[in-house]
Image 1 (cartoon, rainbow, N blue to C red):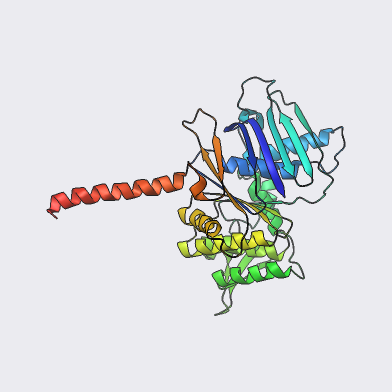
Image 2 (image 1 turned 135 degrees about the vertical axis):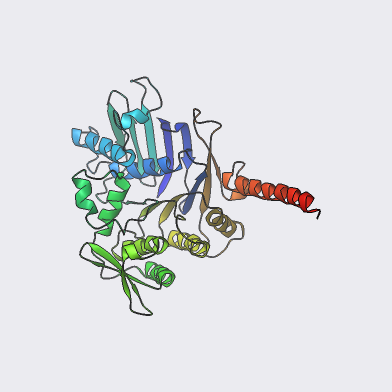
Length: 352
């Protein structure tokens, strides 16, 4: 479980300290407030922690760190160094990630100096799984080879998820996850199979098998989750990062996804999502407020800043009602106000 993160002087963040819950962590905010950036930073730190944690770090550790951050953000110019807020080449961007097993820190400067360290014990497995906002089953054929040849402009989260999808299915799955699989299969009314370099969604009712790119995008996103559970990439000891899970899903499925995220957290998976969706955040918040089953910890993080030049501020709360800044709710309130104003204008014009 990831417990805390401290970030200084990187992208939208000047100096923030956040404390996570072991269940579902929800990042909300307007565009360009750093939600996806924070997901990538945390995910990148989980993958860049060197397997060989000696006191003295070697060049391989440094290259691994730089490569992860550069691949996740893909900046132009000098690379990830351009994302350091300070223009001073000696002022570092600082990252400190704390888990139940210890902490890990890193410093990155514009002069390409990188320092890493910490006390997290060895763990050869990469426990972070990142699902990007655009689904990948339709682009999966040939993607890994093309990316490795540097023929594609996608960031590294797409490469990582395709690598995760490439693993063979497990012979058996944890009982709790098996029950979740059944609920997901009901959404797509079928199952997901992989044949060579292509994915297919088989409808259990009419026995029709369709290639992934012929299936609705929302169902492809659910199919991705099904396959990741089937092959063990998403398991009880995974930390799941999901950017905009609501993208291209209809409201009925969004309700089911909110339930799925809570059920997933109940099995032991720690979840981080970034979202703009009123329904998804509302469902998660109501579940906390009314102690709905399954009861899991949920924490909301509201990202805001007064203008693009200022650093982002992050407010934390156990439900949406705990937040002073809630851009999703604010916009729905503004929509209601606009509707009332239009009704007044219409009423006067029609003499109602």
